[in-house]
Amino acid sequence: MTINHKIDSLVQYDKHKLAKCGEDTFISGNVEIRRPHLVEVGSHCAIDSGFYCTVKAEIGDYVHIAPYVTVIDGALGFLKMDHFSGIAAGSRIICASDDCRGEGLVGPTIPEKYKDHITCAPVIFE
Image (tube, rainbow, N blue to C red; front, side):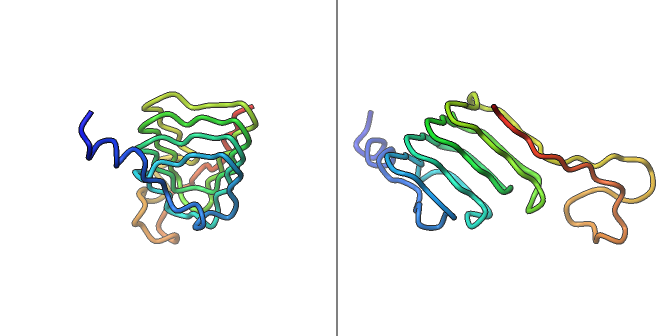
């Protein structure tokens, strides 16, 4: 392990950006949380490098989110992780999906009035 790698592994995410963060929680400095004001993290958690999140999230106590996990949808998406739950490395969690009914266009840059129907539901780990 190089000195730079050791230093990088000690740098943590600025937890003050989050809506709430408990004690004894490690969040890697190499994460991207797009809406930190919508994210609450409990105590005794570990969120590893490469975590990418664009949704509202409530993360309980003693939760582990392994490296390179992606949770996407946008401001309407919701992820809830109860105490003692976890997500395996490389997982992809999609909190909404275009229905592709042929009644409109799909994609994140399409104005609302031209969009097809979107199904959005909470994703809950119990």
